[in-house]
Amino acid sequence: ETLRNKGPLIFMEFDPYIMSNVGEEPDMYVSFFEKLGYRKVSMWNNLGGFLGETNEWGEVVSQAVAQDGYLNLLISKEL
Image (tube, rainbow, N blue to C red):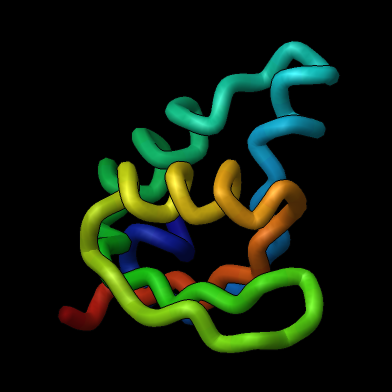
């Protein structure tokens, strides 16, 4: 309810490889945030290098796979 109604910024690590190892699918998280209205994603690699911003969750998953590690994400409802 808080995420839907208040829309706080969310900062999290995103690692599709670890998610898969514990039986979770990255698409599950994508769907969760999309349903709550979160559209803007800023991405950093695991060394803190800024990778860019997107409103395409497929790009987030692709970047994480390309980085061969996790991404740090700042997720917001702003576009």
